[in-house]
Length: 407
View 1 (cartoon, rainbow, N blue to C red):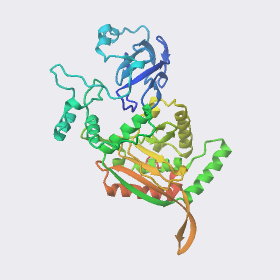
View 2: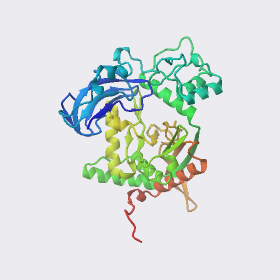
View 3: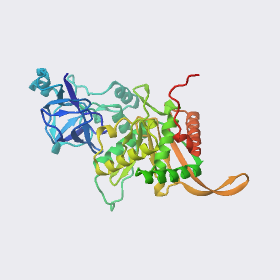
View 4: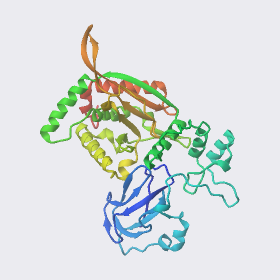
């Protein structure tokens, strides 16, 4: 069987990525999950893995070359003897692909629009309707599509520029933003434009959760395991709660709602130059100690800039924690196209009322940012109440449901 290896969607917001290094050679047999090549996006350097076992028959793109997403860069086959269709490696096929440029010539920013053969601009039907409704001049727009097409996001960014930011003072220090900072700016701006955010915050008694964390840490130390953190415990509670709230584990796009079967939680990790959001796939299936090991590994790989394509893609909901920096609470921007993101504040020692008496307690405030196209206020309120119930009775985090009930 012949398979095409393409550049997958890695969450890049620019038009191209740079293929930095091939990690395999023609004729080499590879396993499923083995890294094939590394690419540099406007967020990070990512290793792209093989989705199947096979033999590398051809590498179609040289290192240090800029390639659009979706372009075929290699051919995988069952064996070296398997005959390849001529179209896969012929000059005509290569000429039919978008022009590939040296990395030195690439700018990871939206491409310049091109004209259709009849002189019209390349533009998606939805973007054309939006431009007409807003009275935008197509000649003034830049397209970020693979071939320079004007897309919905370009219309939204043009509308945002109708209200330009204030000009900085003449004595301000100026510095060009990094590729990661540009990506964060574009993604968060697009999120706020596309998704009508609303927020639901709740405070919860963390006394039993903190006791659980302390006991779990002691057990982990005796076994040589990574100790669960507050983030890990909240992540476990989030994954279990999401099982009962499908509208929060969903995405809205192209006039459709996608409900995801897997619960893949993106964990926001801060770096010196910005943030990345590695993904815990199937988060609901991992216990606290597994989550602690997974999140520790992801944070270490994020700090080294060696997260794989699989570790950076596929998230269906996000969680972020700034409590360790002393914030009582904060509101986060949704990671598009997800329906929500949960922001955790610090656990504080506070006086609580129990049985009419003031007693010392531990409290945390969390804020849910939700997309109102998918989630109504009552659903957000019910989700937060269920999540709070889970953390205020954290023994439930260790309970496993029966696989089958024979009643």
